[in-house]
Length: 474
Image (tube, rainbow, N blue to C red):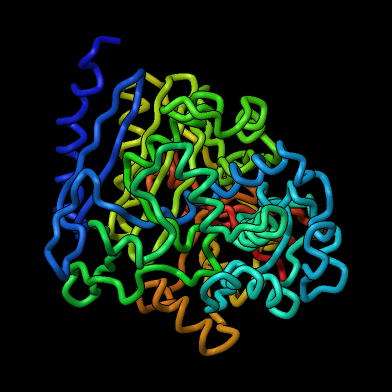
């Protein structure tokens, strides 16, 4: 690779960003690529529509769920130090950890918290506690507000609750608060010099805020909420940093746990363990998962990835070990996820020469739809599925537990929690695509829009999987 190879892609990346943002109401976008000892950062547009502040290369933003890879790294550091055992029950370290289903929490292992196989049903549980005891309050609240979707290890379901419990676990075994631990064990050694975990710190430097499209004017409207509550820190609610910071973290995982400055952050063995398949549902809409990382197959190439939603924003971190490449991005409107997917596939196919095969190459006719109709539930969410004109029609209803939960989730969602019914066309038994999409749309990140059904018993599916999250037949 010649010295300027990475810089040849800077102009086409900038052109794609400008075109997409202009036509899709995304105020600002910033992205970075590292490969073979060099990196580029491209910034575009506006960081805050209220102030008109520009999006710059060093503008900060909320990591969202990209934080989950940082939290997992912290857990494995404590495993290496003998403070945690991945295969021990969580209650060994957190005796007061309980769920609303008696005994369910007792069977959850530490490994299952960071591998999304814990079954904790608390995906929309948003307690509004602040400060040093926020995670303590979250775990305490699970005893009445956290259900159980499945037996630990039985299924895979993306778990914010598991990561937050892992964060509290880290506080107990280290004696440090989660923000202090993150600063000492990740930000410092990795060289994430502009990262923090609070709005108070972020306001001291340029930081982007999220935006939502106003349905009447179709213009970007700033969010009313900057961060999620402190209780969601380890799942991605509060950490903030820059593209350069995330590139440094990605490079650390690319280099077997050694940061760009040469500091050993994680052992090579633990870094490799995070990248190994820990659970595979065998369904194209849900990629295999490691510990922390989601392992996206693009043909024969695996992309280690984690995306993160924040109020009105979306981030992405991807590591491609076999091509020595890190890609990260942030856009301050939820629609920017489509641009991130476009850029990732462009980097893979045009820059790296990876052939991306069609994820779905044929559709079966005459699929029996009756096993999938019915009502499915998870924490504060109900999905009613009926058969209409040879398709499935889904109606999703948010059922808030209380006024505080409703306020936080409504602000996080941009002011609306209801959506019109969605039709799905059958691809094969147990797998459905949203109507109106070309099949090639699902080759990248948007494979998560596919819906699958699992564990059919007595002619009825027990679970619906959308976006990697399970709901269970009521």
